[in-house]
Length: 170
Image (cartoon, rainbow, N blue to C red):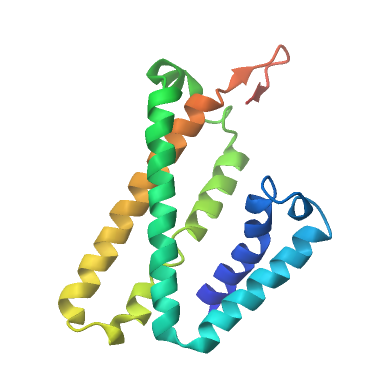
């Protein structure tokens, strides 16, 4: 249950802000709050209509999300990837600081909250003994690959620089 509550909360918080550059009224309050309420209502409506339809919509949105991330990684590789910059970026304890690293790790754990959902959906599989391990392994490989790719591109696009006072910034 916690998995679903976290997913809905993340969606309600982030979807309006992701759409903000395209729809100005969602960029700031109260439009972002209204957008979050609409997201929660839409997720509830999809789940009330039935799990079979919700699973199809979720699969379609997941594939769209993965395709978008692959396009971002591909474009980033062509346009901004710089191995020299990547090597100079990480100064563990300074850039990122230890508190920033702990915060980033805790946020990244939220990305894995959906993995155990595979087990919840096992009863709908024809051969759960075969399909469940395949799905779990595939998701882990996909998530790790996509997040490493996005991180590499982000660090190339927004290099960390040292300020005169010794602090680091992007």
